[in-house]
Length: 231
Image 1 (cartoon, rainbow, N blue to C red):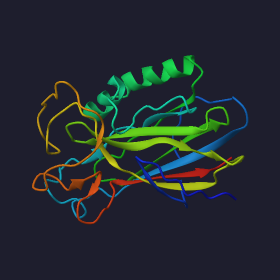
Image 2 (image 1 turned 45 degrees about the horizontal axis):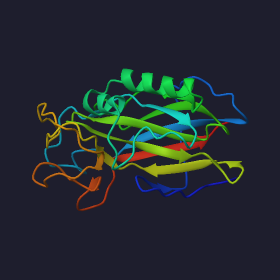
Image 3 (image 1 turned 135 degrees about the horizontal axis):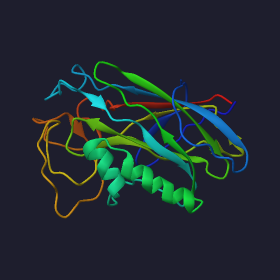
Image 4 (image 1 turned 90 degrees about the horizontal axis):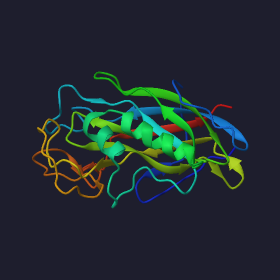
């Protein structure tokens, strides 16, 4: 069994655990594997108390399996319209269209399309299929309510050294999409013109609890993605 520790500039990863739900289109290029994703949040009034919103939730999961030519988001780079739409409103439509374009180009296999975490809940699950031709996975979800804040994974490899990764857990960094200048979870719309690049979320400590994408005093992340190979 291969359990991987994976570290990238825009996510922390520890190897271990996971769980199932809804998925997207299948990918048949090369050897394939099925995975179960469990998204669990740490975002609570106890962990992130400053201006904690009463209707805390996460938008529906949206992402894809893909090859190394693709990055749907990256720190220090302008967000696509699809990422901005997810980060500002939770809508998946524009990003789903962008994923469709990548599939038409042959750079993406499956669309990953799942539920979010509603108010009062702490986890949600989804399943998807991945192939050797498209062995990377990227998934995003909006922190809601928020101006333009989101979290997710970017280009996580599930096929490593000739083997499918059995289990992996990702500590989720929070990001600012660079499209809205609001400072608190419930800030009104305040478009950033021109748009800035995607950054790790850092805000005034009197407004929220974030510094470089994590809780400023405890380094607690907003949650985790756990991936487990199921077939």
